[in-house]
Amino acid sequence: MSAMLLLFVCLILGMLVARFAKPPAGIVPSINWWVLNVALPVLALELIPKVQFDPQLWFPVAAIGLTFGGAWLSFGLLGPRLGWSRERTGALILVCGLGNTAYMGYPLMQALHGKAGLALAVVADQIGTFPVLASAGIVVASIYSGRTPSPRLIVRRIVTFPAFIALVIGLIAGRFGGWPEWLDGVFGPIGATLTPLALFSVGLQFRFHPGGRQLAAAGWGLGWKLLLAPLLCWVMGTAAGIGGLVLVVGVLQAAMAPMVSAAILADEYGLEPALANTVLGAGIVLSLVTIPLGNLLLGG
Image (tube, rainbow, N blue to C red; front, side, top):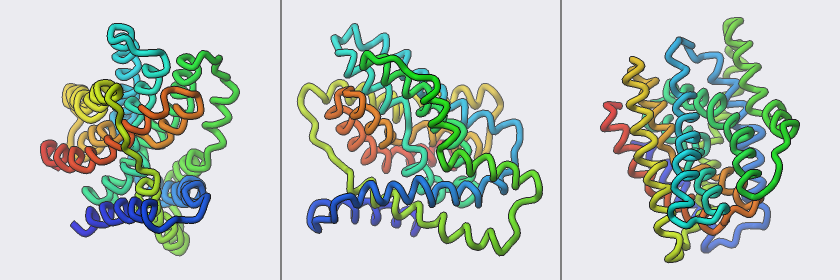
């Protein structure tokens, strides 16, 4: 209960600071820089060597791929029939195909399932979500904005991302028995800064200003992201014989709120930023209810 309370307190604190305290300019990029370039890589270094790899670990990664691929297929077919612009279609594919499996996923999985759940969340995020964002996400953003995607840029984004480098190092360390205890004790406190700072940053950035023309599209997008996609992932997992915590975390990561970075990417490529931010804000609020509820339904 205290872990869940921490999530709400940090999120609400960020919203209150943004609204009333006049935070200094550049605070959000600074916090995000620390989370992405220090806390997240250190957390990967701490947790990945401790993950007990087994054949079922393909599932959390596949669930991320199914969520994005399903969004691309569904909205790519649905958009023209509903009269959506290419920009609107591309925005929904990005923000409703990619989940906030780090900023929201890590704290929620840690609150619900402890270090074991957090370790699986890192696998889903680093081997699933990030490569999809850096590859297929760039492709979708380029196609629906009328640009040509660059394979060299995609590869460079993946191999130079600090958390991805830490993931590789962590895998190697795990093969040799993990880190010495004194070094592991250093990683823990630094990685622990991710949860409060990530949720505080989300609160600082929270926006929800829906227009009448956005509500229907937002409803389609969130219906896929928070309900249909995780249901399909659960069907895939149970049909393949996946069970236990791997199934629960895989489905819940697929059900996570839309990704902040996907909304930023939509903004960079001019893919209806107002809709992307509306879906992002509504998804964050709704997921604080749907994720714990989904966890109960899954028996977590």
